[in-house]
Length: 339
Image 1 (tube, one colour):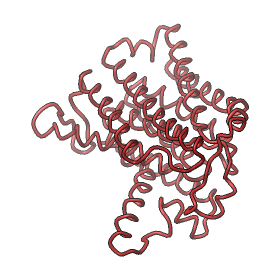
Image 2 (cartoon, one colour):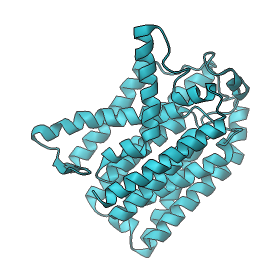
Image 3 (cartoon, one colour):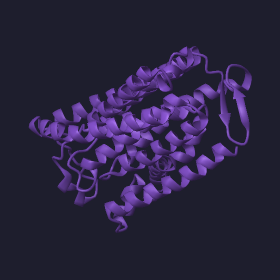
C-alpha cells in the first residue's frame, strides 16, 4: 500500500509540474519575468537573457499536489502515510519541514520579484536574505525541539542526545547546516538542468533511505520532490525554456534539508549533497583566495562555471555532477544500511 502512495506522489508531482509548463511559461513571458544575466558571467550565457524565471512555482505546486494526492489515497485506504501522520510527533516533523521549505521558497520569490521588476540581477541585499533565511531556519529548528526531537544519529558513532550537555551544540550547528545547504542548492542553480538534475538524484536517494528506515512521510515527500524535479527537467534541460529562479532553488534547498532531518540523521546530507557542498566551498575558497592574493583560484565560481570555462559543455557538467551525486548516494545508502 505504501508503494502505491509513493508511486502516486511521484506521478502526480511529475504530471502537474510538466503540464504547468504549458500555462506558467507563457504567463511569465506575458509578465516579462525574464532572467537577467550578470555581466561577469560567461559571455555565452547572454543568449539566456529574457528566459522566463520564477519557474520554481511549478515545482512547488507539483510537490504539494503530489503529496496531497498520496495523502488522500492513503487516508481512503486507511493505511500507510496518512496513518503515520496521526502520530503528533510525525505530523510535526512533516509539517514543519514543508513549511520551512515553503518559507525558503517565499524568500526566493521575493528575491526573484525584485530582480525581474527592477530588471537587474541583484534582488534582496545579502543582509536581508541572510536575516530571513536564518529566521526561517531558527523557527524550523525551534519547532523540531518543541515537538520532541531529542537526539540525532551519526553513522559509525551512534545516537547522540541533543537536549543537554555537549549535545546542545547540535542546535547552532544545525542552524548553520539548514542555512548553509539551502544556499548551497541556490548556488548550484547556474546551468540548464543542473540543480533540478542533481536534486532529482538526491531526492531519489532519500526516498530509498526513508523507505528502508520506514519513514513513510519522508518516503512520500521525497518521491514527490523527485517527480517534480523530473517534470521540471522537461522544460529546464538545455536549452532551458524556463529557469526555477531563487523561488525554486531555495525551495529545493529547504526540501532536501527537511528530508534529511526526517531520516533522523541529517548528517547524511553531507555525502548526498556533495555537489551542493563543493559548489558552496568553491565560492568561499575563491573569495578567500582572492582577498589574500588578488588572484583567482578557479577561473570562475561556483565551480560549475570553472568547468564551463575549461571547455566543458553544460550538458557534460550536468551529467558529471549528477553521476558524482549518484555515486555518493549509493555510498550513503550502504552507510545507512551498515552503520
